[in-house]
Each structure stands twice: as C-alpha cells, then as structure tokens.
Length: 363
Image (cartoon, rainbow, N blue to C red; front, side, top):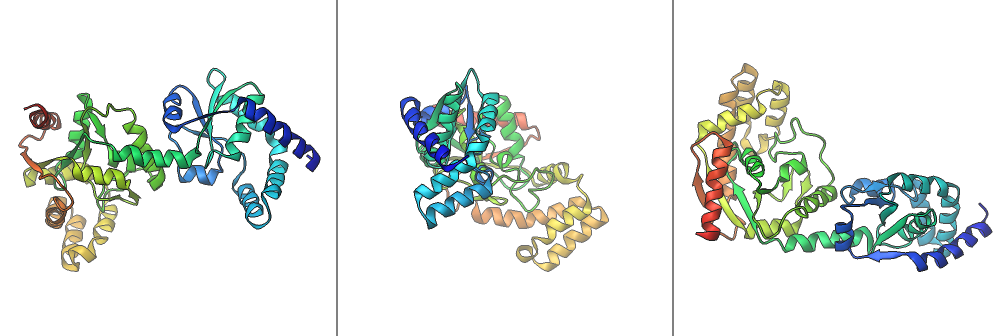
C-alpha cells in the first residue's frame, strides 16, 4: 500500500468512524460482554500481561510492529507514527476483518485497546465496514483497571475464613460453594496454595494483573448484598499480589478463625501432599532454611527421605504455627471469632460456620 492510499483510507476511516462508533462506559461494556465477544486489539505482549477475562486477542500490531510505531511517535511525530501504522495494517485488513467475523455473536462485537484510542477506534471502523455492530470501551483497558480498584474498594459483605496451616479451609470453602454460598477462591485463581509447598501440582501462576482481573470477573457474578466468603491471605500468594483495595476490605471484614486438632491437621496435610516425591518435598523444605533454621530443616528432610512424612509435617507445623500466631490478627480490624471444629467432614464444618454467620447478621 502506498502512502497516498494509506492517507485516503485514513480520511475515510475518520469520516465513517465518527458516524457509527459507539463508545460505552466500563460498567455497560462488562454487562453487555456477557452476551458478546470481547476483542482485545492490543499487542500479544500487552494481552499476556493482563486482559479482560474472556477477551480474544486480535492484535492490530504484533509486538515488534507496536514497538516500531511507538518509537516513531516518541522520536518523530504523531503523523509519522500514523503513516507507519497504516502501512503495517493495510495489507492485513482483510485477515483482521475475517478473524473478527469468526468471533462475532449475532453480528456484534466489543473492542478495547489501552486507552480506547486509535487502535480500538480504527479496528472498530474496520469491523463496522464488514457489517459488524461494534462497541468500543471508553477509556480502554486503563479504564477497566481503574474500575477494578473502585469496585473492590466498595465490597462490604466479605466473610474471612482464617485458620492455621492444615485446617482444611479450602475444602470448607468448596463445601460452602456447593451449598450455594458465594466463595471467592483466591488460591484457586492464583494457582497456588500460599505456602512454600503451594505450587506443587498447580498450573503456572498467572500474572498479577490477570489474577486481579480474574478476581473481578468472579465477583461480578455475585450478589454484593449477600455474604462473600474468602480465605485469609497475605498480600501475596506465591508470586502474585492481591489488589490493595481487596486486601484492605478483607482486613475490615468479619473474621471466623477455625480451630482444628493438630493431629487432624497433620492427616489433612498428608492427604494433600503425601503423593509428591521426596525430591519435590525436600526441595521446598530447604527453601525454609532461613526461617526455620538449618537444624530443623535437616531433621525434616531426613524424615521425608526415611518415609516418615507424619513426623516431618508435625515439625513443619511448629514453624507454621509460630508464623500464624504472629500474623493472624496483625492487620484485622475486627476481633476474629474463634470457632472450634471437631469434625473431619468439610460439609459439617461448613454448616457450623454458616450458623455463625447467620447469628452474626440475624441473631
């Protein structure tokens, strides 16, 4: 495509676009997105870093092309960047349009880029040109991220489940979900159980941005007027960070601190991690040397290598319990309500906790 042809397309693009383009605010965009395909037109690298859950990446520029256009914009001029962009996009307009048509639902699409500017606008024009009704996210992905933090800052019905390592909190949360309760499974979304052993058997962790986006997507399926159950966590789970706004709301929320007999905790941990190889387990134990001390780590490793996993777990719980005692109420505003659980059945324990919440709210 020549520069003249590119400029001709650019002129008509602007004329047609301003007649047909629909910009929508983030709340409406996400609500409508339940019934439509969302197209992320940013580069693959941007998409991988974080995107609206469910979005499909149809990049107007690949990573190298985006860098080339961005460099022209910064070092030369906007006009030069546009000219380069049009030269890049021109030859692949047909392919981009055909890809979009594959994903359209009833001839409709939603589109966003970083700020809701040129990339999403021009792609929306192209999609409209081939007969697709297209909405553009006003403010783009940046507006979506601002909305995420505003939404999380307004959560008022969290119920935080707290307890020492091996208490079976995740299983209780799953039992609550099976009973129709609203459960935000942070460890499930993070692909990590939170301890030095938390990554064993898990898929690779998402980026922090994507983890946070997935949290919002889950919360948007809930009724904010009903309790939302969540496990107490530190600000990090493995390598990902909780959104600051959510972390603050969790620290303000009602806290149920469960107490479970130590031997039951040992058995729970054995059931969860006992099938992993000694090499996998000892590698994680050695990561704790600075905090546990060399002698304790050496003893735990020896027990694992000898096949005495119960003794190793019991020793590790001594370390984890000290850590829990130090941090359990450190940031919590409300005094945790201790709930003694004697059953090994997660369903029965879920019923006990539900009764506590009902008493707190309606008693």
